[in-house]
Image 1 (spheres, rainbow, N blue to C red):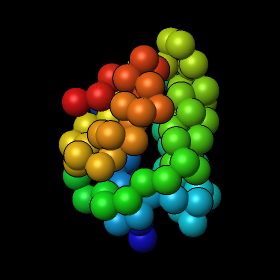
Image 2: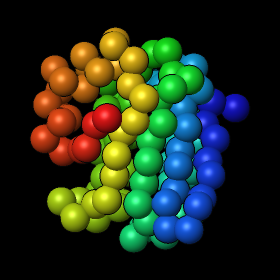
Image 3: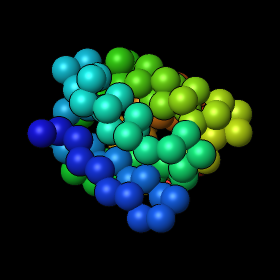
Length: 98
């Protein structure tokens, strides 16, 4: 399992393990669709070691699910390689990244 979830009140934490790529698309979608759309979504990259362009698309789909410009989301614990991908893609304009 590459995706694990935890809900704490209105906070829905999705933790990525290993590779965040097309192979986990369905698992990732199921992870956020089990939460209310109004939830505060936290994507934890602490255990992630790889991310590709399909993962960027999955994050955008989650953002749309969570309310688009009004989405309450944060990407946390990004390692240098993942931070660089997010920065090159200008995702800091769409997500809070810490």
